Length: 125
Image (tube, rainbow, N blue to C red; front, side, top):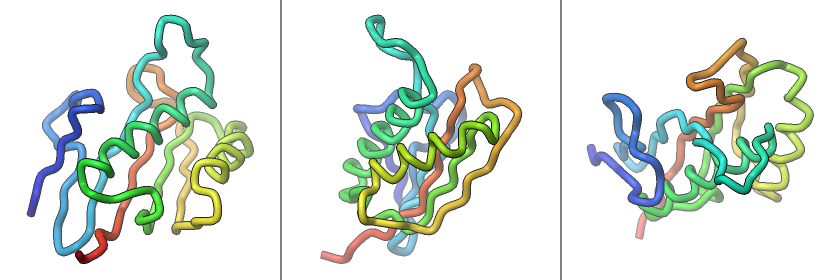
């Protein structure tokens, strides 16, 4: 087992790693978007894109990309955000369609609207 941390992603806020590699799979912990930059307006879209940007940085630290994702679980506040999530998700993943679950929840830590968790297959060199 290998613990993975990305220097380009905020440090975990609890007792866990950004991701763990085991038996050729990468398990990415739940990823929150973080606060917007001072000049950014916060929105559901910003939070989804920021969460996936953090995921990309964690995957880079794992020598993987979004094209290696085999399963995604997305926790979103409010089922009403599902259509917008689906549109942004399709834009981010393009032709790649990993298995996915979208779980509407009443709230998330720190008032965020989305949290992303991934399972990734690491290609053998």
